Each structure stands twice: as C-alpha cells, then as structure tokens.
Image (cartoon, rainbow, N blue to C red; front, top):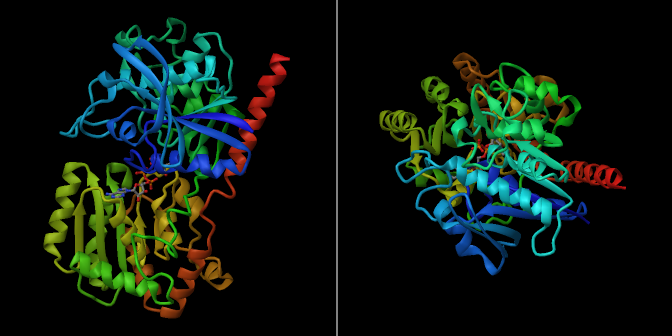
Length: 480
Ligand code: ADP
Ligand code: GLC
C-alpha cells in the first residue's frame, strides 16, 4: 500500500463550491482498489468539525496567529486529518467568501496554514502515519512543497491544477506572516510580478504537476490558457501530465439514486422529465429540455448562452438553470426567466438534491464554457442520459464525442461539441440539438451511447497510483 496525503480546501460531502470537492472526495475510494491508502487533510470549517467522528488530537502548535490543533478522525467514510484553528476557520459563510460574498481578507494565511500543516505531516508524520507522497490541490495547497523544501525534507509532492484562474496572490509584505523563506522569492520561485503566488510556488516546487484533463494539460502550456504561468508550465516539460477526472458512479447512479425516481423503468427519463418540468413551471413546447447546473462566473460562458437563448426557444427548446455566483449574471438570468415564462426557469442558489433532479429530467446539459479544466456536469449528464452540448475546450473536449454523421453511424456519438466563445457556434449547436431531438429514434440512440460511456475512475485511478508509485520508488532509491 502506498500512503498518500491529499491536501485540499473542499471535499464532498462535507464542503463544496465546485468540482474540486467532488474529485477530492471521490479519490480515496477510487484509489483504494489500486493499492493507495489516501487520507485527506482539510481545514477545520464548522461543517467538517461537526461531521468528524471519533476524533483524536495528534498535535498542538502555535502558528499563523493562534493555536493549530491537528485532529484525526473519520467522516462520511473518509479518513481525515483536520486542521482545527478557530481563528482561521470558525466563521459563517463559505470556504473562501464571507456571508456578503467577499473574499476573506486573510485567505492567504488560512491556506498557508493548511499547506504548512501538510508539509509538517510530510516531514514528521501524523500519529505514526507517514505518507509516502503529498498530493496538493490548486493554489490552496500550492505552498506545501516550499515549506517542505525549506524544512530540508525531500518527500515527493504532486500538485494538481483544477483551475489556473485562481493564483492565490498576496502581497510580498506577507512573507513573514506566512512563514515563507526569502530564498524562494524570485521570478524562478514563487514571485509573480512582485507578489507571492501560491499556485506558482506549487508549479515550480512540486515534484510533479497534474492537470485534470489531457487537453487542459496541453492548454496550460499556451499563453492563451496559461494565465501568465504558461512559461512555468513549459519549463517543467515532462513533469506535467493530464489525468482525466472521473465521477463517483456510486453517488451518481441513475438506477439507484434516492434524489430521483423511476430510472429503473424503461421510461424513467420521461417520468423524471415531466416531474422536473412541473417543478420548474415549464410548459411542454415539443423541443428539448436543456439544463445548466453551474457556478455563475465568466468561465462558464453563460452570457453567451443568454445571447443564444432566443433562437433556441424559437425552435421549441426550453431551459432550466440552477446556479449562483456573479450577481450581474444572476440578475440577467432572472430577467430572462421573467421574459420567457413557461420556457425558461431559473433557480438561484446551491442545491445538491435538485441538481440530481436536473440531470435526471433533462434531455440535454449545456456547458458553453470559455475554458473548462475538466468539467463534471457533462459527465453527470452522460450518466443520466442528458446529452451534453459543450464547448471544445479542456476536459469537455476529452469527454464528449461529437455527433457528426460518422460518429452517429458508428454508434459512438455522445453529444454535441462546438467551438467556444462564439454565439453563432452555440446557436448552431443548439439548432443541431433540436434537429436530433426531433428524430426520436436517433435521439434515443444518442442517449444510450451517452449512458454507456465510461465516466468513472476506472481509467484514471491506475494513472494516479502509478504516478505515486514511481515517485515513492525514486524517493526510496535516492535515500538508499
Ligand atoms: P467547477 O468546479 O468549475 O464549478 P465542475 O463541472 O467541475 O465545475 O463541477 C461543478 C460541480 O458543482 C458539479 O458537481 C455540479 O453539479 C455542482 N454545482 C454547480 N452549481 C451548483 C448548484 N447551484 N447547485 C448544486 N450543484 C451545483
Ligand atoms: C475546477 C474546474 C473544473 C473541474 C474541477 C474539478 O473547478 O473549473 O473544470 O472539473 O475543478 O477538477
């Protein structure tokens, strides 16, 4: 068994703002069969502490402006290490934002403390458990390899990039407060235009970097998608690779999902569709029922979808959106629902159970993202027979097979893929969706193909396991 410490700021089902949480929560079970024992280090948010069972205190230390206590325990079937630090995490609101939707002013220290604790576990273990590899996720764990190196330890580290748009930037004046070493503050270290970049720290200092899809891994090396860090990515050469996310097929199982009804019967989709239409106040117009389940942010291209909406509705299409985020987009979507009663339904908020009903009831899931490192909603769509209509970017391009004539004939098409960032391209994809939906036999075949497509971790879990094994081996060889 290879022991791996996974370090992250979210984890399903305890705390989630997006797909990062799904992946961090699914990896331990997915990797178990591949010979990996994974424990997850999380911040002690109120929801995490409340869920923790049989916890024991492993260590107490004063750092980052208060007392840090490292707890070990289990929650929701996961082996957890939890950093209890009330001055950093005992707050209302989300993991990153206060109840008014503003970033917590001390987010740099909140996640530096998490990274520092991860490095400490890498150096001295936790209650006798010593990880062979440390695996951090996104900028919140980016500083971990620096702390580890600074302490003179050479335990292998992996950083996974789920989103390059968030760098974890903070002022250089914070070096002392964050316990960061001066030796690493330079352009080939974690300095980024005069500031500290936690993400760059990880990209420079982690032994290996993974990106959450092969296409995203290639995109990261380009100025267009590298968010200013493409040079760093290129400089790491073969240390960077894409490993496609999977989904947890046990909690996302249309045949056995307590949040929905009726998928066991042959017309399960129809029953869930009618229920969703009624729940959303939509009136049958003959065309496809499309859904969006998404953070409302510039990344997701939902402003483009607003522009493409009238043409889609004119062809009998209907749309239900579940999302929250950017206030401007929330208002624009609420206005669209008001302008098209019975055709467009918008629910602002975050609702896990409702999201299951959305995928189960939909004919199509729309993901018109400007960029999408992997994307999970198109995979939930595939699994629940909701045809993904996606932009050709990142993991969307890697998970959906476009329904061109050849792919339809070959029986391998699973959705519609269009070129991103253009309203006409999106309109054309939605036109194709309506045309396919108007041919019931062809559409049913597409749904069958989609539901058969493998979206679990079976392909990717062995890739992570092999990566950890190589790193653990090379570490052992170096030590010998
Ligand atoms: P990202 O991580 O960029 O937000 P992903 O597609 O990887 O995008 O993951 C989004 C996850 O969050 C999915 O599990 C999706 O179902 C969920 N989600 C997004 N918005 C909502 C919402 N308003 N209510 C419920 N679930 C949501
Ligand atoms: C990020 C990305 C998303 C990806 C998720 C999980 O939030 O935006 O594309 O699926 O992480 O890796």
